[in-house]
Amino acid sequence: MGMGNAENDSTKVYADENNMDIEVPDTAHQISSVACSCKLRDCPDSWLQVTFVLTTGVNSAFVLGYSGGIMVPLGWVGGVVGLVLATAISLYANALIAKLHEHGGVRHIRYRDLAGYIYGRKAYTLTWILQYVNLFMAFYVLFRDDDQMKLPYFIAIGGVGCGIFAISTPHLSALGTWMGISTFLTVIYIVITIGLSINDGIKSPARDYSIPAEGSSNVFSIIGSCATLVFAFNTGMVPEIQATIKQPVVKNMLKALNFQFTIGLVPFFLIVFAGYWAYGSSTGTYLLNNVTGPVWVKGLANIAAVLQSIISLHIFASPVYEYLDTKFGIKGSALKVKNLSFRIAVRGGYLGFSTFLAALLPFLGDFMSLTGAISTFPLTFILANHMYLVAKDNRLASSQKLWHWFNIVFFSIASVAATIAAIRLIVVDSKTYHVFADM
Image (cartoon, rainbow, N blue to C red; front, side, top):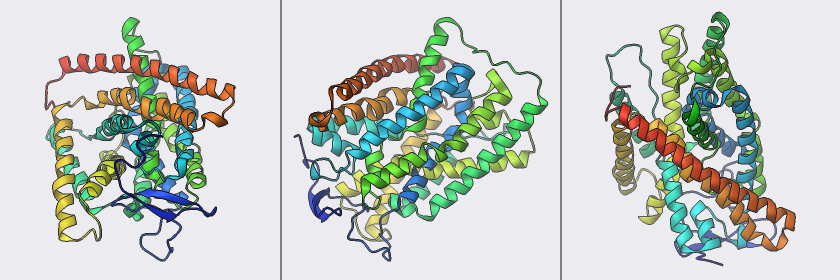
């Protein structure tokens, strides 16, 4: 069947109500099993807590850029249709991955483990590279009403905050209360941004909603926006998040995904549509730079966005942390000198390099489209459909197989086209902005 557990040792745990032993790969981080009392600190996460993890990712500070990054290039019709379609196909693709979590009697707690089990060692390595590209996509937010501080300084401050949080939070399940805080912070910057946008929209004259780009530039812009659509809804780490959820893991994960792609997306759509309605084709890549209002209100929204993005980044980076902790045997109390010093050195170094890269390339937001093209497209749509096709081949009707092959071919073509468009955008901006620029 493939590499199986070639990369990690496995243990067997009593995993579900059907008296079936499910092999679980060795990991330094907490994963769920039925052999857990809710009175224990390491109790697995409920589906609702996992829902908060998922919605935290999709409503992170990135959402402040989608009015300009998605709606402006696509317009009302293209933007609305694209967002609705991206929501539906993302839910479908993520559900396929979730259903394969215990395929073959093995808990696939990492995306690369699942790919390796189905295809072999080379697929394990390739998937790990694609996933790392997705996780490496650092981001920054900026509030500035004057020129006293420059953009690289803000990026450095954000990097320090991310480093402190990563060192003090050993794994996903340790987020706990932070999920509630993240939700509160999300409500702050979304409510403020929507409120100020609507207020500006009411006072403003008629807006121009025409698509600004023309000719070939318009084509590349639309393709790049489609890649951003994919990036907006997907993390490329469903198995890693699913690993922490209570049994039954498949049923509970599907509940979490259904919540994420319905109720969890309400604030997402509100802020994206409100921003574009208020400012039209002049909407910027960071919506809070468009809104007008009291400086302290805008400042509060920016601070909330920065703090929430620190929590979000920890979620996106957790597979890297899990891999390093497991490889070097970092287990036990998070406060042990060995474990604490390891997190300071390794996680601090990883985030330090990410921060340096973000400051070096101030147009790193352009890489959002490239990340969606070369990483999120394959991980979420191409691999999801093909792995499900391979795993369930004997149980699928001909029409179902044809449907999965259509998705594989279509999204492969879309991935190639989006990669070309994203590279073109990066080349154009690299001629406009210098390194360490104060944009």
